[in-house]
Image (cartoon, rainbow over all chains, first blue to last red; front, side, top):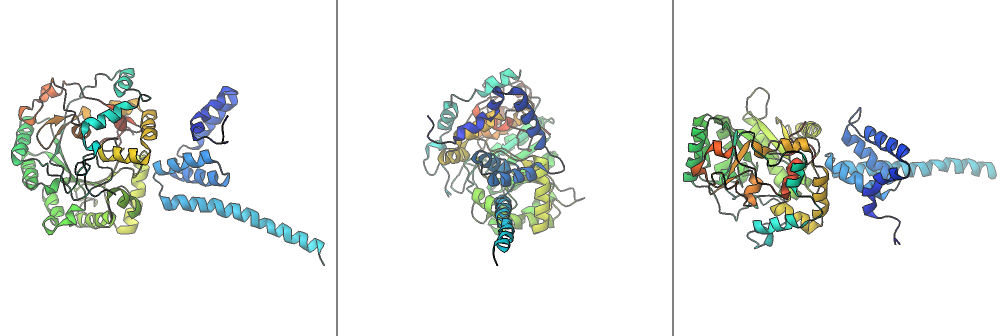
Length: 111
Length: 349
């Protein structure tokens, strides 16, 4: 029995999800591969976005994978940390902007 | 960072035989030769040598963390003028060898370096010097190197692992980035890397850590943009080179706990097209003592050319060498990963 929910070795087994549902799994991986190809955005820019999203969704597998990927795509530490701050700003902002909703409710309930 | 070579430290990895033992221990990694056999590339044969790569010695003013030569100020092995003359004789006899790639250590620290380059120029060979940049500033006697290179139209190839100090200094030593920038500016001043000068200045990127290099074309664009904007520096091409798991880089991988995952990365990224284009197929490497190797990496692992071929530059026979089988080992995965890797950068576009 695993003692933790996350095992770094499981990242390599990601492709195994096709075993139980090959059609959808393969479609997902084909799509995934297409998304990360050079396009209007460079592969490095996409890796940095992926790194930021990895932090926003707090996926340790993704953080592991896209830290390596960003380094391999030539991103530097400053760019990578700025990307994480973008994620943090959006996550923080998303919480704080609900403060307006709270203020609206305060106004509604108080004299 | 260690400031002396592995040899000076009496480190077990200073021994080539021990390095090969480490490389061959990983039973989970398929033998490189088997991998080539699967793609009908075994035995790996030369396509015909056009490049003679001459390592004129292990002496260097730097002690880079990743150095596959284990070079440094404490190394004393350098090529003599007599051995250089044997190289010149072989080159004169073989017009097919059109390019001479001089490497080290810091080649400029060999007292016969300038004589050798002048003699190569007389032979009409295209000469490449792998200059570590900081040597230009290391001592006043080296300050005129850009002018010397210009006069002999030497192609300068220089390592600069990043366009910022953090990663450059982590790999090559404290203060190396700043000195490298200054040296690049000095090369630019005499025309190197400037459009229309005919003087080629190429840079080498290799990762400062346990990861593979970026795609050459995109990273070159980024280097050009950053170096121009930050320091006014121009250069011609960026060569992306994968670090091979030997010598000090092997020591780094083992010490940092990255060895197995890095080897796995190389094995997973094996590219048959890159395997078909490896540099050992068109290059012969000469060691400081005149012995012949398939590449500079094999040289550092003391893996001489196959016994069927001449072993020393004094017995150089291009025809026989062009029929040899190239000596392989697990480190060769470094040249076949992804877009491939060679002294001229990636081998697959």
